[in-house]
Every structure is written in C-alpha cells, then in structure tokens.
Image 1 (cartoon, one colour):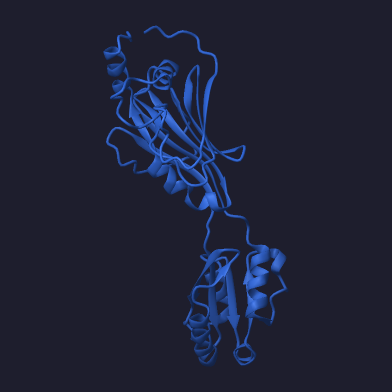
Image 2: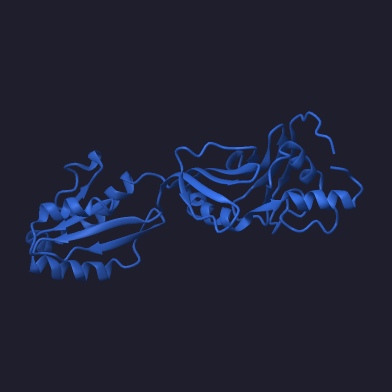
Length: 281
C-alpha cells in the first residue's frame, strides 16, 4: 500500500461506563474480525514503526478517548472533561536526552522516563526531644493511625534517636519527609508540637500548636497532587511516547492505569490482517 499524504484524522469515543473501546479502533485485541481503519492509518502515518499504541480497556475517570493520525504521528488522546491528561503517540523517533532509562520488560523495547510528580501521601516525622516526649509521641501516633488530610493519607515516622541533638535530627528528617513535628518536654505536657517544614510560608506559624492546628496548617500548605511528564518507548523504526498531565485523583492512579490499559500493537499483525482483507502494503 502506497503512503499518500495524510490530513489530520480524528475519531472520538465518549465513555459511558464502558469496559473496553468496543469499536476495534486502536484496540489491543487481535484483528480476528478484520483490520480497522485506525490501524491502517496508523501504519500509513509511521510506516517504519515496529509497534503502534493500543488501548486494552478504559478506566474510571476517563471521559473520552480520541484516536488521531497525521503525517509522522498517530495515537490515542484520553481526556477528562475537555482536558487531555494522557496521550500515547507513535512517531519515527523521539529525543530521550533528558530522560532516565528504566526497565521496559520487553527485550526489543527500551524505556525512558522524564516525570515530575507530587505524591498523594503526606509524610510527617515526629522528633521527640527526650524520654518523656518519646513516650508521648508513641501514644500520639497510636491515636493518629489512619489520619487523612484533604482525603490524602498521612504517613507518620518516629525518630527515636533521642541521644542526638534535635536540630540535626530535624534537618535530616526534612530531607525525606515534607513535615516534622518536634515534641518538647513542654509540648508533651500541653499536647502541642512545633511544626517544621521546608515551606518558607510556614516559618514561625507552627510553634506550640495543637495537633488539630498543625494538621490544618499542613492542609493549607501542601501542593496539589500531580503527575506530569513523559514515558518514552523506543524500538525498531519508531518511538511511542506517553505524555502525562494529570492532577488530583487522576494523578493518583494514572501511572498504573497507563501500564495496565495501554499497550504496543505489532505493526506486522496489521500488515498481515490487511493482506488477508485484500489490501496491499
């Protein structure tokens, strides 16, 4: 089949409780009922690529799925409301200069990632200053088990190295966790903590505050959850890029959803199926 110049082609599926794409367009299912126009146009768009992106199933929060194809690129755009948050695109090549290589799980595909993210979990390290604050801290953490802030789980860590100075312990804790609660002798008696953070906006606000006040200050300061950037999958004759821009609850699951729902369709199967249908490549 000769490659003719392509204009932009798009096809949108509005999701309404579906479990898979259903139309055969860019599906990961074998082409037992013939090759779809989406598969053919994808190969026509990037004829060198060994694989094309495919969609195995839809996920909660995916409002619509749009398949598109034009010269030198084709793929799947997934949106919530009107905003795309995940786009899988095949191109002849891609630039992975600033990405980190990770294991792809495939012998003929190399994977690279360039991602920025804000985790769902909120981390708090509790730093007691002595024996009595340590006992108070242990009791406090038992009471706070299962605590959430803005529907986000709070994970507490206890620094029980009370033989060391508090200052260096706080600095070390802030390297791995977002927030630190220092519990002094007076704090253990009054039920208060000193809130420390790398956020300059909290400087001076968290001195001798109650647990409720400390959690409210954290609630006001934590950034929104997000997952953005690119995954790159390079292989013979092409590259598939997953472009992420997810926020809030979508960001919590978009990485695992992309792993499970998106896939790589061998271009050779498209060619074989098209030939069975009487088309020439």
